Length: 559
Image 1 (cartoon, rainbow, N blue to C red):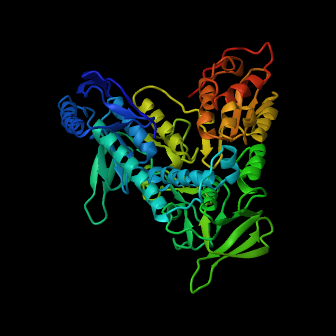
Image 2 (cartoon, rainbow, N blue to C red; image 1 turned 180 degrees about the vertical axis):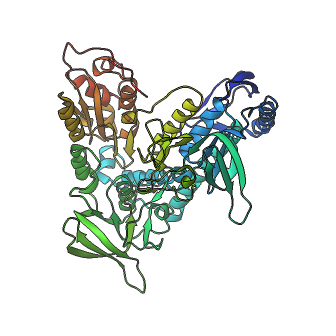
Image 3 (tube, rainbow, N blue to C red; image 1 turned 120 degrees about the horizontal axis):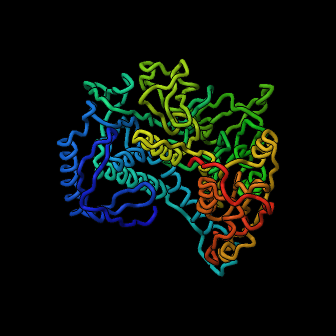
């Protein structure tokens, strides 16, 4: 988690609601927020004071007519994952009376069954790799006895982290005055929602605007029988109830690759089953080849490409897990594998059933809610549904937790009267293996396709971690940074990194794309020495931009 920072808030300020009227609000000065998601950190005394202040805030809003427009809320959000949480906090900052409906637990997939617990497991796998690498330790002059681990202790670390972050998210919303409504949310009309628990009466509320933020669930192809014990999804794997000797991972994308890092560090042998012709198909091809050399070949990992897992049967009656493979193109039988366990990492599917979309004439596309570039929901006739938005995995634009948060904040800006469009090409992604992989923008093939269509040329610059002092000091020189750009304008089209702390390094590039910064400008930025950030410094300096290239952005960039 990022370090806590303090911010001074005036004892009172004027909050403008969606109806442009003003409410006088009182906040405690010196509230401390943690990181991007602004988790409020409170002592016991501060917590009591904040609860009292929150009551006064609510009373103030009520007395001043927080819903003069006749609605119960300015904004209702269905789903309290990272996207819903980010939208809720931003809405309160904008002075909107806000409620969030959650039928499960606050935090959604990311906090409870995804990003957060998986990073706890990957932290363990990273430590284990360091301790198990005799060559690495010897190079640093270290001698460490044989490393071991306590499986339950590792599992508890992941569970405890998820609980802590979940509590942080809940407390931050309560402290800011967001109403957390428990139950399953269903849309009744464009400005009406009901929610409730099974077996209890539903409650109907109205809102000037509604955001759908229901996220996604693991996708399991037909023919695969999941028992949660020997054949399971990432939801089950994160509990780490056991470590199999041999596990097959169906799918070699982000999820599969990260779990291969965990399982091999803990002693498992891994077999990837990939439907496409190459392993790790979502990465830039050059990065993918390097990743195979660094993350796959040296480890106890083998793989089958160009095949489907037609049928997977869980282990029972003393028999192992059985996996029937067929050719992905011809559908002819290829092989049968018998393993101890199988992890299904074939992606995720939107969780949009039961939302009441039929009540607003919306038909999903493969489960995804159709939206425009402003996240406004589109109905079956191709028309915009007034007052209803959809963010995050449920719309399928870019299935990442931080994308959902960015989209939610963008929607709140629109609800507050300020037009805003998310630039998805500036949103980074990362795979937290050891070493890490990160990327933003186009891959080289995608950039070439765009260049051919639009009639411009692209260039590629590269730099190695082996030339970086800090990486060499850590004895972690294995890595590559790659820049794809337009030499005629200096526009950054894509950046891909494999190496130590790649997930942290990518943000300089993603922010440059978001702000429309050109290479000829960013190459003058100063980086502390010796740091890993100099990998990006050298990368930008290696780019050859034509002398006549403009130093300014020709058009405003949506961010």
